[in-house]
Image (tube, rainbow, N blue to C red; front, side, top):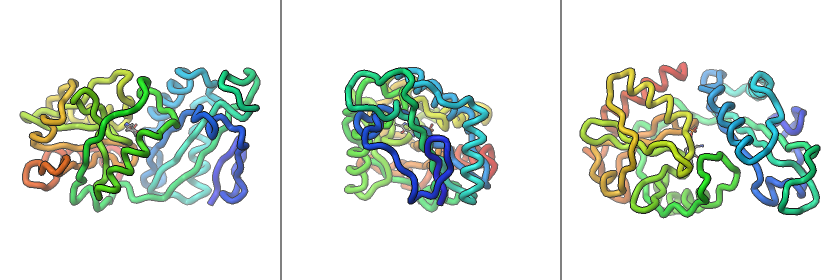
Length: 279
Ligand code: PMP
């Protein structure tokens, strides 16, 4: 297994990062995940645009132009022979003697990339449909930044794991913000409903792609807040992410949706997304 660290492709076992790395000490860094399908990166330029935006929002210099990122990702996918899975990219503010304020401007950002082989298209969970639970959203107020500070999401996902379900939807003031690692959607009154973008949630790349596909398919999309109660009563629900694509939801906090099977519109959206991704 080959990974990428600070300008070099090295064997996984040989890859090291300083204990003074600010990603390790302060979670002072940004990450991205792109899916790989048939050896090709899915919607990757949108992920790289979000990476650049996230870095800019916290004042970390983007170490590479887009073309260089693409070259490195492609090379890593090739070297690892990944057919289906994902590429993980992380940039931190670098390693420097521990101090909260930024290190000197010349400090090099730390760049780490690795691939994971994973079944993303023919996912048995997508056939059955996923159950989700809801948890309070205890995160900070800049959730539009894809920061590596993921403790709240770690705790939310662990709650889901304990409950034997696939995902936790986070709730603030009675309204669903998003999943712990996904964007939440419901279908109610025949309309596809998802929360509008703001600092309260991550601008999902898959979210945008699915909204475009839904529009092209003639479905009505409503970007508005929806409550937990509205979700319980929805006809269908699903969540989206680079690695889950469109994941049907069949149960929320023990409230079965529809007939307890993936909904027809959700299945259609998943099929459209898979087609777009080149499955
Ligand atoms: N929200 C959160 C909190 C996430 O971690 C993710 C996955 N990274 C998403 C939404 C989905 O984003 P994307 O479709 O860009 O993977």
